[in-house]
Image 1: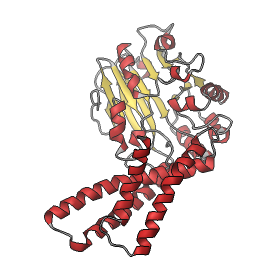
Image 2: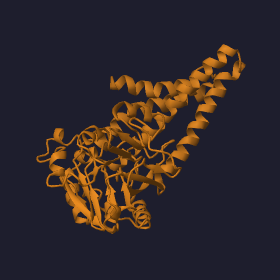
Image 3: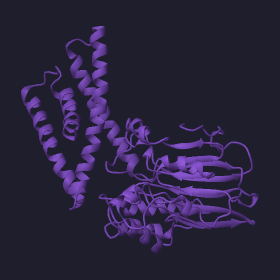
Length: 387
């Protein structure tokens, strides 16, 4: 099945660009066919070298970039094929129809990849949102919570990017800073330089971190220890209580839902353990990497869950596939009578260094006390479950 999918990913763009009635000169046809054949054959070996036991960063960079390029080419080849069928039905375009479609697919794909790479590598824009929590005490009204997620420090050295992200976070003058998991692809030793700037993040009340699923590919306990070394509070199925004006807020965190299947001793998702010893009347902000954990959060009466994981789809139209697995792809949503969920599009990127129609973000959530719906920058109410 994997082989068939892989062949289809490469075969359709090759057909669209070089063989679907375009009638390029034979040397062009031959060169294109050879390039796609070599690309297809080398791709799985590069992926194995980059993400297997060897963890060769150079191979991973090539493989990941190739994956992004071929996904965009495949997507727009599909759309180009649909346009081609429409033109055939309308008897429009004449003999040049196939060449026009091939050129359009190539130009649009190249443009989106260029813009997508810029979006992936830039310091994310700040997304600002007010979240009203009815049980939040007045002393905590206006609490500024900055959310980072999915930094995915990896084969591309982004130590300078990491430092610039940290500067952007510090400029927001946060009370609480959250890292919602998927900090890196690789071990703490491999990504030490890239993660080091997180040690300079400032907050008034707390800096908390939970594991994502990618930590369980590369020493999850090591990342908990590394973040503690950098001055963060690892929420390994535990909580901290912050207080202002005599009013408390529970910051709880759970391991990723994949933790138990990793086989790592002491790692599993344990919400009851994370909340042990807290007063049931206190408001709770839960950090859980994957949005789908909101089902358990809503059952437990959590006030606000903060998650990442989805990347907002990262490269369109992958967001539609993400939606099959997760209840929300990005933004603020309501689940049950009390629980709200904020899903970040993520601060970095995984694998392919591209973001197409799914911009990265640093999120500033301003917590508001009292009743009424949460509102965003546009003043609109938070969407209901599944929004």
